Amino acid sequence: NAGVTQTPKFQVLKTGQSMTLQCAQDMNHNSMYWYRQDPGMGLRLIYYSASEGTTDKGEVPNGYNVSRLNKREFSLRLESAAPSQTSVYFCASSGWDRNYGYTFGSGTRLTVV
Amino acid sequence: GEDVEQSLFLSVREGDSSVINCTYTDSSSTYLYWYKQEPGAGLQLLTYIFSNMDMKQDQRLTVLLNKKDKHLSLRIADTQTGDSAIYFCAERKGNTPLVFGKGTRLSVIA
Image (tube, rainbow over all chains, first blue to last red; front, side, top):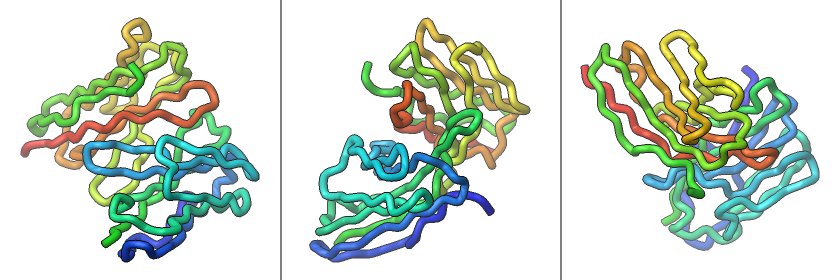
């Protein structure tokens, strides 16, 4: 099925460890996004990539880095995880569709202990 | 205001209508969206409305747009237990990323 695939679905890290969250889309979308979702905070944009070769900071970029590997893939890296980064992370993509809406992945639930 | 505002909770009885309200930030926003998030899942696009429309109906869903007051609403007719979820309002301003509200948690009581 066409869509946005995120891996892993669940992860537990110790404080200070690093990891990369992977995201891939197969809809030929130009733009990709990383959000985090915390209780009572809604969705907050971490980074986005408007097109292949570009990345921009969102609302909460500190502690994260991203790579737009190619048109399909957009990864999110935590270099030194902190408990404040415990969250559910969503990747999304959008293209020049009729309504320009986003397609979301199913999320990665990350716990930092 | 700077934020897309939504009330956090709504509780309705099965079979009643639900109305979820949203106030957005920019009267020049081009598209406005409603997303649904079921427990443990990502967000799914439920419906959207283009800014030159006042109303859009899609089966049990009715979206109303009041551009003057920057107010968007989603009405779900004959609400079912399967409609229990978090509903997010979002606006598109130019080419910048969508701005989402914090979400309204809809609880349907059988």
